[in-house]
Image 1: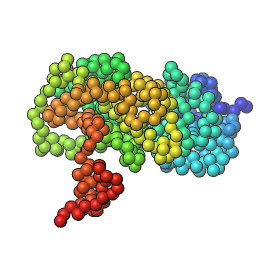
Image 2 (image 1 turned 45 degrees about the horizontal axis):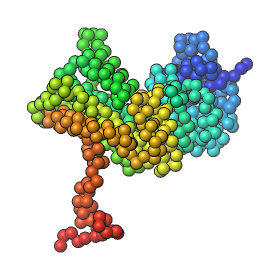
Image 3 (image 1 turned 120 degrees about the vertical axis):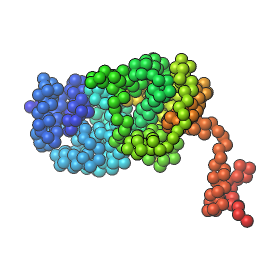
Image 4 (image 1 turned 45 degrees about the vertical axis):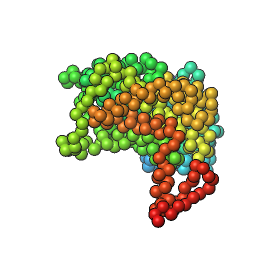
Length: 472
Ligand code: 6PG
């Protein structure tokens, strides 16, 4: 009996779509799920008539696979992934390859790569982005592990990935947990841009008094511009146009204002802090989700803590205000990418990942949630200078900042006066203003530290460490 080329464990939404993608691209497959009824249902429905077989037990699953086996695990990150690895390992033979396509913590992946490789199995930790549709039609994939393991699945991944003008949206990221690290940072950028678009929506609704369709028209226009054309802007338009089937009003207004999170945004911020990367826009988006979850407290606080009387600033007149709002969205989105890239730059050195930034920009151009036309500019910036100090200093991005900073400033000032929170816009403005200031007030912080703790300080006019008895 001919054996299958590719095995999948975990028939969740992503798993189902990825195996259908592999099969469509000519790779015969076998699927295994903890509950067999799910496997049966899949084979009778979406898997029917396809070159996809099912297995009831792990023994049967491995027996049906060609050697060396290529097995993709699409299971919950954390202990569930460890449990599957432990169960399947007993059936594996030398050279077989496990791929974790979930959103695993990169340090877990580091550990698993080391453990599995020491048993002569291959192990790839692979970030997969694009949601259900991307998984089926072509995701962006970020595989990390040993190069030999990657080579064994390169042709499979190249066919399954989204395709852009300069190739498939997959590349070898680097050793160990680098693939999951890059996917984590992708998600941090994703958190940032989602919050930025939500802030724009809030101002359009509360200051400009626009309804769902009017706001959707703005997002539709933005999606045609080089600076903002992106998947997230495109789906924001769709979300704002959708009506509630119950009463025909804007559905988005019926949704509870509490944003969930599964961990990758938090891991991005933790890594940034550990590496010493300044990521205020991304951090603000994470904190906005935390604050949103305090719904009950916010309801109490609203009647106790008074804000200013809503002033309408320029956004009250959309023809004047929308270009400024676009400035705020463009600069904050640029800041999200720049901050994510800064984390990758530092991680590349600290963890010896040797990340190739032009390739990462290239594989994010299609298939993934943060795909956008801006990524072409980011790719160009890295091609011109593979090790830029900061993306903001690339000439094209510097021009964007210099021309759009007044607009962002106006939007933040107006929102502050109106008492409307815009954490990502505000943090971006502070980020840019801090970054373009050669002398910040941390000289005084240094003085205080030396005053109470003799921590010493450096001088601007003399080399060395200095200490002063500040209180005589
Ligand atoms: C993607 C997404 C996806 C991620 C969700 C969940 O690239 O396809 O990043 O992998 O799991 O967006 O993120 P939160 O639930 O934490 O928002």
